[in-house]
Image (spheres, rainbow, N blue to C red):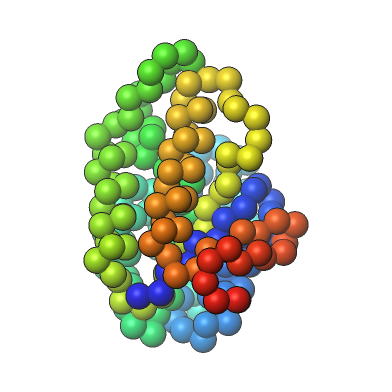
Length: 186
């Protein structure tokens, strides 16, 4: 298995960069979309991503069971592009429909812990083929005010660290420019 983490801030060019890696691979591409269209603005973002994807790519939409999707679709001569880990993380945090307090301890749903552990286990076991993960770097700004926002930033940082540790390559993208932090140049 070859695993790459591509991460950066909002509108940094990380998705376009990851899509370029997939296109250049010459492999069959499975695009795993983790987003959910909860409103018109998110629907427009999803439509924009769909429009720029090559028609030959197969799209799999999965909001929660990412490890199961990777186990099902990873194969030699195939590249699986997951966009994005932080949307997936957010989906898991709110998977049981609970409302979080603005102040106080945040207890995340059991599904959050189970799915996160399943993803990391799948990476530890090794998956056939190549996987490219896209994720947001959300920890470089100010500390958020609300408890759930702080928890999200913390969990996103922990997830990025865990995936980067298991990846052969980690690429930070800013202003559309890649900076390889780990592994071979792109």
